Amino acid sequence: MAEILAVEGLVTLLGGEKRFLRAERPPVRAVDGVSLELREGEVLGVVGESGCGKSTLGRTILGIQRETAGTVRLDGRVVSGVDPRTARQMRRDVQYVHQDAAAALDPWWSIGRTLDEALVINGVGPGEERARRIDRVLRDVGLDPTTKRRYPHELSGGQLRRVTLARVLVLAPRIVLLDEPTSGLDLSVQATVLRLLRELRAELGLTYMFISHDLSVVRLMCDRVAIMYLGRIVETAETAKLFESPVHPYTTMLLAAAPRLATGQGLHAAAIHGEPPSATAVPSGCAFRTRCPHAIDACAVTVPTLDLIADGRRVACHRWPELAPLERV
Amino acid sequence: MLVFRKFLRDVSAVIGLVIVLLTAVVALFAPWLAPKPLDAHESHPLLRLKPPSAEAPFGTDNLGRDVFSRVILGSRAALTVAVLVVSGAMLIGVPLGLVAGYRSGWVSETLMRITDVFLAVPQLILALALAQLLGPSLKNAMVALTLTYWPFFARIVYAETRRLKTSVFVEALQGLNASSFRIMFAHILPNAAPPIIVRATIGMGFTILTAAVLGFLGMGATPPDPEWGLAVSESRQYLPDAWWFATFPGLAIFLVVFGFNLLGDGLRDVIDPRLRRSR
Figure 1 (cartoon, one colour):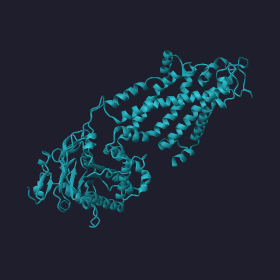
Figure 2: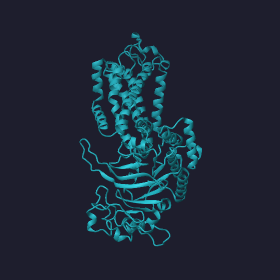
Figure 3: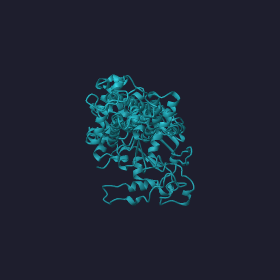
């Protein structure tokens, strides 16, 4: 599969500001040197605990959050290093679907106007052309044409999710960044939304970046998975391999901590010890060392690099050779 | 609509609304409602300072003019001042608040510091100074009131914009590459409308009151205009004997300001249940 989007050494600092007559605030390293690539037509899962920077990574790739360092390439063309509005113009092929669909829609605007606005902003005209595209996209996401007259508060969670999807799909993107697309939905609605996402991908030839903390959904949907911890990627692998034999100690813990219904062993909630450290005070060296059972003195000194291991898997851990029976390439 | 039903259950707010609507109707049809519309400018020295009677229900003033007619005619001046001053203040304050709230850094800081400076100028003193400079007239009073009232709108809109700027739907619009202008005026402004409307309503009453004070001090409306504050001022020398001369224009001011305040409070309660008075 061809590479469509590549991110290299992406760093995003948030919040730090010097303001007139006010105390200076140090920035938070929300995304701290992330490199990853998206291949045409795949679904890449980005998994991590709340606050690990996965949403910020999504926003930075989208372009509304300007990167502090690093590059973003779309089809090999550099589309980073510009202000957010230019970035969005250059990255029209990339669109983002928010986690909270109800909050992502202006409560004063009807669905029809909201969809039309997306097209107007992106210079699609005339009116009949826009109307045709709106009708088509509503059919694509399985919504009734009468939805156009409705307002966000009149729709259910699943319908709102479809509306937010329709709003970006109407712009014919190639890459869709999905931020927790199933959060806040009950299980049956989750299943229909996931099925819809799959169908749309096949039909429209989309590439997804699937941001989630729900491992069961990620396992179901994704071709590859990237595990994030405190702004850094600690492991990437094909989904099946990652779930079968996690290498990074954090991945191992994350998988062990996921509640399983079938095993009958009860919850493994204790599998991850303690809370993740605050993003304002990331530990030196390997960020995970404070919670890692395998940490040694060397882990506090240098930041581990994301090494390529035999089966196309990448791991950022000083001790992976001892932890996994795999060869370095 | 739930909001309307909630509003209609609030008795004092409904009373406020009725007073405001009645005032508006009276102002609109004042020349036809007033029994002696010509008394706006004509005087009848023979009829001066007559107590209330069937002929002149509110009595007559020092120039023999019908106080009842002049109170009715005065509603026009009061509402004109209120509407023009509040619209003018909104026209200045709302865009400034939007831009200051949506932008960050020096643009925002500069605009808000200018706002603070204007907030620190006492309304009456600026109005008096302007009247001194340009000569007393209702127009100058309105300019002075507008120049001192817009910062209240700027501050409210600023706070609302700050809050809405970080909301998810604004971020979603930025993701779609919507222009700042579109986000500010088509999305943030309607969502910030309720507190602006409340402020405008209370501001109307407040402005009528201040305009009356200016009229009373002789820095607003000029004789022989039928203005309530001016009428109260003219009646001073004839008190307490000609009590009707001061009482009825004064009651008119009280009633209209009271109406706007009740309405504004009621609207605020509907919008913000946290401020709901317990009863």
